[in-house]
Amino acid sequence: MRNAIKNKGWNEIKTNDSWAIFKIMGEFVNGYEKLSKIGPCVSIFGSARTKPDHKYYKLAEDVAKKIVDQGYGVITGGGPGIMEAGNKGAHIAGGTSVGLNIDLPFEQHDNPYIDNDKSLDFDYFFVRKVMFVKYSQGFVVMPGGFGTLDELFEAITLIQTHKIETFPIILVGKEFWGGLMDWIKSTLLGAGNISEKDLDLIHLVDTGEEVIEILNNFYKEYNLSPNF
Image 1 (cartoon, one colour):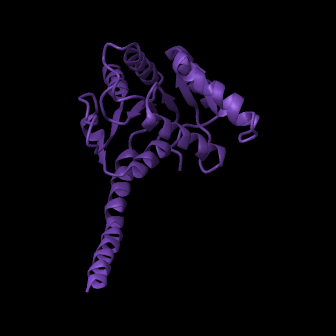
Image 2 (cartoon, rainbow, N blue to C red; image 1 turned 90 degrees about the vertical axis):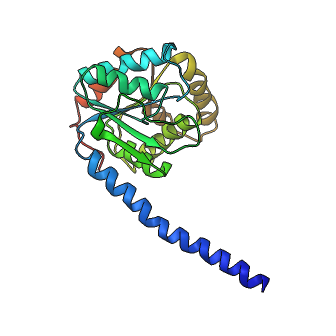
């Protein structure tokens, strides 16, 4: 009897897993339909915990304005902190402001600077990350935590392994990211776990002007289009 109950419980779990596929498919379909219409955009990543009076919040807002001035829209994770700053800068500059929000038990809530028709909600991180990669012409990575690192290294891995086309990945804040880059060079490269050319995938800067210079130099040679 005990085994029958256990087996029934396990079978119910497996059935629920199967039905979850349709919810996942729904998130993909909704994301593709909405984001295929946004035009060339650059994603801005960073901590949800950064306060509006912090220098990196202000810098993210400035970077977003400059990105819009160059004809791009801005995509963020849709929440507070650096994400809010990115959407705010895009909104003030009159550009496309996209938010890919994720349902979390803390930190995350929609910020008020996202275009009404460009706010998407996700339950699954992996679906959300596909949308960032597929519809971004560049990643601007401000100081952040584990989530920011996750998004950063997934993009680097996909480019390194030729699963997607190359696009600019720009770390903003030398004092924040410098130690990580030193470790990558001394430890990862030193151990032979990455190649010298892999370091070319990442740019380290301090200003919005440098971000724009990198984007413009890259796209002098490439047409702007989603990463199909």
